[in-house]
Image (cartoon, rainbow over all chains, first blue to last red):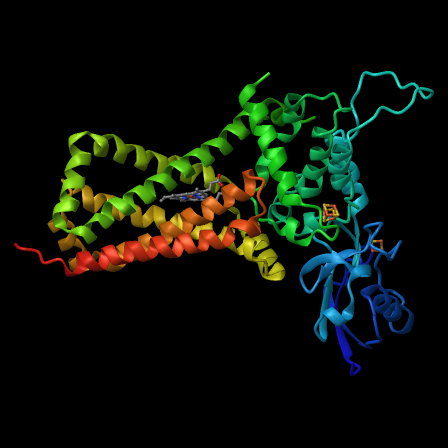
Length: 243
Length: 212
Ligand code: HEM
Ligand code: SF4
Ligand code: FES
């Protein structure tokens, strides 16, 4: 493969120096075989501009911290190979989340708030007995729950969603997928009616207009269309049935 | 806690509005196809068309149906447009987001808003002009098509079918368990087929001889 010279156009802004307006800055870098955006950004920081801010932890599509807009589309930078991109690569931070600086955003606070609002934990009155054997669960159901649990909270689906971009209080696909997980888990004793009070709203599942960018973009390929529809059906049904 | 939000928050109302949008949309979808097939009876001749029209008239279907459809359009429009980007800031966010993302389904929503608004305006003109020459007869309709309404009706046909099929797509995406890749192409075929049928009906009207 002939070596390419890549041009990166990178969003720059540091909230600590608000006198410098947000801008796009260009960098050039020669491409090496199997180069990921993780490698490219680290080289840019080492060789050209030590002030460049971006996040990586696991660099293996596990931690979800490297989400950014790659040529306009949300994705994981550590998983993206430059060979799949054109010569010109535009990088911007994810929208919706609070900007830390340049390409770095704070998804943690957003997801923590979401999980608190949705009370995303098992609600049960059962006493936990550490000595008793674990309750058995049907394998198919365990798989279904696991499917939703694969979310790494990267925020790509939120950034890809026009509704989440326009309306700050919308829970988005990650939130609805999370609720789907608890709706199908028999250990969670919340009734659909109880969940309805939190999710059967315009900030919840009925705020979703089915744009499906989440489903197309999720780097974990969680079947978000089906997860969202499941929550929608359960919530509509709970609303119709009443208390 | 915020007083006004806590007092006003009603999942029941918000879910109810979504269901109103769904069922008025489905009702209009059914009506639109029924209307298309009824009008297309002109292809079989003026007598068939007039017989259908008289049938709907005689059993009061027109007198119940037309007000219901007008009401459904208004209620549906209001319920469905509640999610549209109304504020200037929202509009700019939506457009900038769509342009960055270049994602077909996101553009499709904009198309649905615009076709919906188009249908609202054109259907008002269409309903007005039809009611003002009541009852519906093939000769009167043909005269209307030949005296300048051809392009208006063609535009209404195309906008309404695109809007309705996007709506059906949206309903299946939002409520069904089938992945959208499985049904998208059939909806595209259906749209093309229905628009073609309507177009043929319009052309037949255009060449129907009107004795004055
Ligand atoms: C021939 C008349 C019409 C038909 C057959 C029709 C059909 C539909 C259907 C089936 C849906 C999907 C409903 C859902 O997602 O729950 C829909 C959505 C929509 N309709 Fe209509 N509609 C018509 C007229 C209108 C008019 C007059 C307007 C606006 C003024 C409008 C605006 C919308 C919008 C904005 C949506 C998207 C709603 C969303 O974001 O969820 N429609 N329509
Ligand atoms: S659902 Fe997918 S896109 Fe959304 S946060 Fe989880 S892993 Fe990321
Ligand atoms: S660095 Fe952990 S997902 Fe990319």
